[in-house]
Image (cartoon, rainbow, N blue to C red; front, side):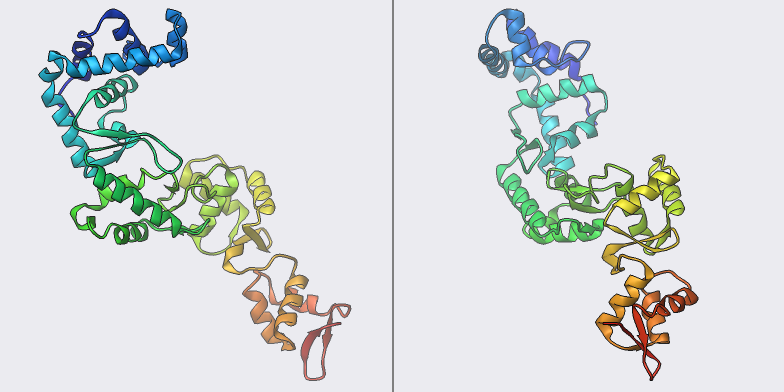
Length: 341
């Protein structure tokens, strides 16, 4: 990914500074051998100065390096970083994505980050409530992409899950002026700039605050499993699927308890759970029977069985037995049933 050696470059750049300024930058950016980053306050305590004074020394150190003759020696390094931002993100990329693409070594990441801070050919936008830290080479593109991300997010429903292809299509519609210039890989990297939009472990996109996206526990994994299956599942099957799909240990009893407590699931048979969003009703078979007859009026036994089977995974005989409760249901002369008033 990179042709230069970051540690050697930063060492040479830091040599342009007096001892204290060099030490402050090494501590602030984790450039020593242990890679530890220090806060302004911690560095200030070391020198017996205020955190604001440390900040001034940090800014002085950065500006001094940028004005030094040594900086010009590494023009090719900063040009290469500029080209990486262009090639990976079309001139805009989230900081964590950029560093992940270059290296997974924590210490090396610190040195790369320091070089990004020092470099002039690119710019950094700080993290805010809507976007992650990001680097860009042209502000117009950065502003345009961020506006498109905001529009995509505003079009999302709270717990909506969108397949990746559909998400990319929605994004392209908002990027109409530049979408054709960039492939799906770049668009997906741009999506990762947003803190409001995220992808769940199954690769589906949605509102980052939704439990369907930011999966935290067994019940969230269970939701994704059942939704992907597309039809009711036994709680034992759900537990097994969680382990198979996500590599998460899911005890059968724990999974069952989580399904019972979560309103996103509804019991539709012995141990069988469906998603409430599929239109299944909560309650026992008698409750379902009552709701159906109240909604549709008098129905024959066959019509009732047909409608109940769409709500519950139960045997026909179970439905018939429940219909015989004369305290709740009444059979009319024409062999249809109604609810007792």
